[in-house]
Image (cartoon, rainbow, N blue to C red; front, side, top):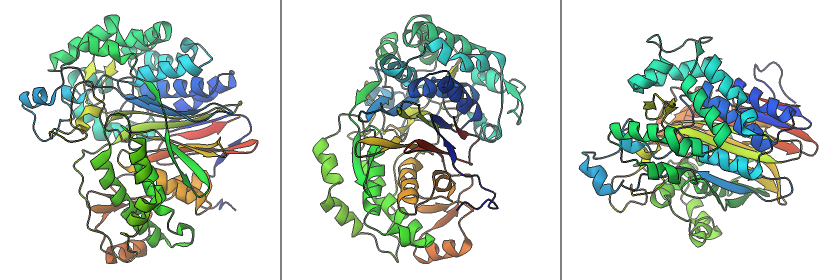
Length: 524
């Protein structure tokens, strides 16, 4: 029974359709489309377009996108909407530019050709039902007429605005300061671009005047981008075969590499060897931390661009490998940390949608770090991501930069099926944390029996860079227990990630949206 004195909110329930996002304006836009008869794809695109305007430091048309889509009565489909490097971006060329160690956040070489618009338009072309001008109407209205800055957006805006170049600062810091809660912001150039995409499709972004403007701007920063690179980007989004594994009688689906979805599956398979439902908090956190370190070590060695080797994935997720990894976890002792050589991945938005026909969409869109590269083309209003900063500059590394290559991605939408039918669409934001977050969330639902909102709101932990980060809501006695096992504890300075989920319960829908963000789940 829900504790109505807890100060927390319960899950949201509805009968016909539901959407959950991390921003109220995005949720409202998607719900409006659903109520007009649009399907899950229409609503998802409407919501992410709005969020690209109203939450500009987390996502945008200058970023990348992944999706899992389960049409009613059909299997799960995966869409990879991550962009590629310019054809001239050889490792030698990047090193010759003077870069060593890693690619900086604001470098033009951190900007791959954005894949988001390719993904949105591919989704719409293959499964949408309403015209794009209707789907984009709210986003265009907010860009041109202004939108209200919400609480979490204002907090993050202040934290990350130092990266903005003069063009971006003119839009996002028009009076020389980050906005306060309730302030109004606009981006008319982005409104014009969205209008052009609504009329002409992906070509309005990847060809013609708009693409030419973006290419000239990137070249002025030292980028190797060409018009041909952008033209190729129109078809960057590709349907690929999802990867999956079973967990407690359900099947969990993820996008294949170059995303880190296999990492979430690996953690889940390790966790399945433990009775987490009967464990105390310290034991659960310890086991999740140890499984995370093992799984992320394999991720950093194996995950990059290219077609995944099905046999290798089957071997990695097979009983022999999982049993061996399980055997490395001692309940009373933390392992020596595995230090990563990947840069931090931070900022993303995720949304879930289920429509009245049972179509389910799990979609994630990202600029990478807060405000991405901080670089904005003033003519188009496009703020570019910096996903390419996750490339390695080490020759022979699986994630080494190369021509027309996609970087390793942390953004991963999730989907759960039972007997071939979608029963949950879910996702967790938070960069590196996402794979751990997927596993922890599903364990809380399936092992501990928490409802969606309760599982989303649970205090979080994350073993990263040799420390175990704990949110302040984890009790002091649990922290001391974990320290006694050898964990180096750090109290998280800000909330760890965010999440949304929708679960299908027969004729009812249950939704949750993270209280760490501004959003909500709504349905009808």
